[in-house]
Image 1 (cartoon, rainbow, N blue to C red):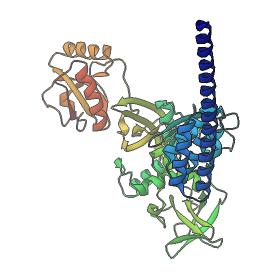
Image 2: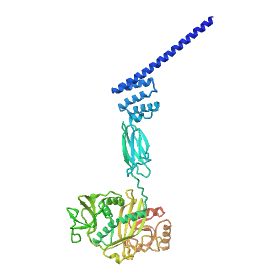
Image 3: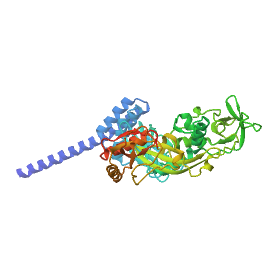
Image 4: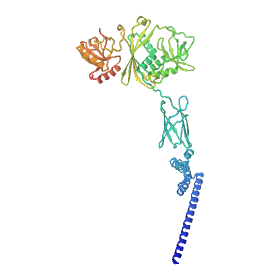
Length: 511
């Protein structure tokens, strides 16, 4: 009996304890819910009254009570954002997204930045990489088929690089702000990938420089310098002059002009020619002049350097101004010049980081060419350097025009077979590698040079005014029209094993 009474008492005690624990749990749960809700409401009240510190405190206590409720994180994030503390706000919004599964919270609270990348023709560029680098955040986006890319960016400034194959890379700046910012129509341009073909570039350059070379020759002839040997001074004024002489007409052709207060103006009644001070010519394309400056010289056209009145007797380019703007004018003064010019032989050699281009051409003044149709009496030497501004890939950095001795009849620019003794009679710079009294010994060295890719030539020293007047058979790695060309060949000769090679000017031919 006693044992049954004891068990009964124990059972009653256990039931009482369990009831008490359940009651406490229910009470605490209700109290916790009430406490969380009360603090959440209090936080929202402080937020509305712009008491952000009190709001942050209330939302933080709500989070302490229930850390898995997203609403308190959003409220506290709003308070941080109102204070400009985007780091804390961003963290709370991200936490709220993770807890709730709602991935739109950041977009709604911060705002989405929209970027549109377009090409030169205004079309959206698909597949462009948009790389954004800020002080603390980085993003990489890819544009869709319409050229659009969007992202919620942390509010700060970003350096933006837009990369797309076959387009020029573009660098710009974006300022992502609270609420988002629309960046509309960032334009990128197609890349111009220039594949350099040196001989093709030389032909294009020479074709466009023809009128300018003609002008130089005319001026030298008028100055009684018939044995032309000119290093052309390619100043900014000369570059735009050459570019204008190479440009096409813009529509004002076969017109008459006169000078007025240092300007050239249209005048249908002007009287051109040697007896008058007026001019005949045509206006050329301004865009054409600017394009030619870039293509020929790799520079922008400096219009302020262009002359306003002509300096040549009858053939030149000057600045032309009328009511619609400033243009270039090609003058010819209606004179039949009886001149002709024709390029016919092209040669290109590598030189350091560029090329040397040589062009033989016929030029006759007042019927001279017709009397000597087979005479190649001039050579122009261009020093050409790579330049991305030029559609040719190469631009002119210097040039020289040389008159060749008429008695030679034809200037031999290359000689693949080494002769026993070179018969060239025009002056040159030699890259001297060997000398001997024995012609056969000199010939063996010339043969070896040709095997190594050098243009071995033999000269008799006593035939030239600036060389040893005792007879030696001298071997040179070619004949050069300029010292800069010779320097490029000298480095090749030294690399080929001719360590004692040196440059020396030949002087005049004496025989």
